[in-house]
Length: 278
Image: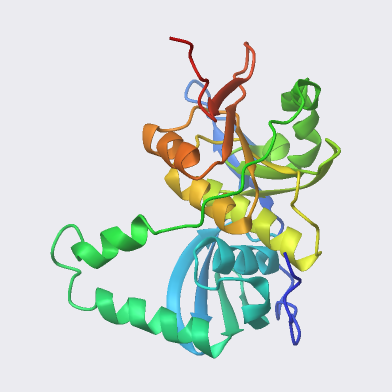
């Protein structure tokens, strides 16, 4: 994975708020107020080459990683070197990301937007929307399954990478383990797909190779997470919750190692499928 040729990543114009702030509440059986901290979320409007594309509800941390990972994981750019610049602005609950991308990627994005025009009232958003939800992605070359010892005590080890979750809950986490079984980095967000986007963005911005490594998600594993790791070229995905049937089908079809790590039992390898003797 090549590092993006960023012209520059601007700082947010105002310091972001703490990821959690104290809020008061009272117990149902008592009127005495007390306080706790809750996870925060902000609206992030993302524009590519001046054209608005999406508004995402995200946790206000690692937004630069998120924008890069969202661009790659959503297929808006095919590679990191198609991202030229990211400018973040805004404060409070309203944030903005202005992204400059390569002309070819922008042309493809405009074509997708044109195909979607006029279909918003059809209920299923038209054939083009379905095709975009189920894109043709490259099949991975395949990789060995990770050694079992890499997963020993993994649930406990990832706690160190979930400070926000430990503090106030209400967030998901995604992490990356390198080809030596070392947990390198983690990101948290109110959205499980956002957390994975942040990890992909961090790997890209720090030019960390993904070969032989694996992604870990604390949430249920559905199709969009499979698509994101496929686009990132990560060959193994560990989920702390069960995958959906469609996610499993895609993992097997694209040579992605998919492993569920239950809380009280041994890891379950869903992909590749176990060959049974006749």
